[in-house]
Length: 343
Ligand code: BGC
Image (cartoon, rainbow, N blue to C red; front, side):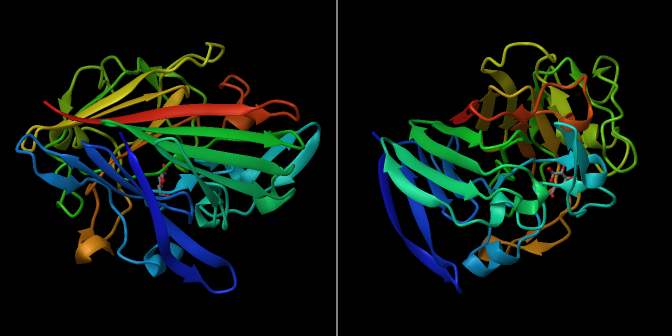
């Protein structure tokens, strides 16, 4: 049985109230904000029965309003990078704002992470909806989007849906940063990571996939069997993992499949992720640089990891990648499950 409650959490000048929703099962407690459909906390038990909050976040609304790292947020209309912020749909050129080197990242300057979503209670959780107007951040079509978070025992499910009035690229994800030792722990070097991917996408120096779909075999990206993340990070070129792992091949049916398993032997906590999406961006918080978070914690490089289940980056410009276009009359559907257990 999951209990669901909510209360007002803050007020954004000229834009209205932000509410905090709390989902509580016997095993897990989750807090969700109506700002950005943000997962503000996830408390799960370790082997010793101790509850710890395992996601990064801020103490107050101000923290989330000024956040530039997408802590816990739903990212859209298109998560990840679009090369040059440019694409062509139905023969028409679209130029988005550039907000990450030469590229567009995570839906633009005022993406879904900064919207105040409308919330309503559903069985075991909360459904958040948002309307993104035609032309929002440069994207075509009015998009009606919802994410429904439900908690059943140890499993938090996020179900995304969207429809659009014009053909638009779409790619939604949740950008939670996890540390299974508890948010505020210095790093994730003692976490064991595995990702169920046979291939990954190498990137160029602005982090755009080169187009190659490279086998993980014989590379530091082979996480098919659990590896200790600290030593493995030393083998990865650049500041750490920030790559799309391919969970399926273009053209495969989008069935729900296992994506990743992370364990933290010292606490016994385990996170399992499954998704209907064809990829997962594994990001080891390479660009966190001492941001002040909950309880005054300083979040530094490698203090956490993200498993952003999604379509492959820059799919709108790469015809060999899985289709990311949502046409009028179609429905975008995406389900991702996070299961918190112990070894
Ligand atoms: C990207 C990173 C980026 C981070 C925060 C991740 O999804 O892949 O490169 O720094 O989001 O914006």
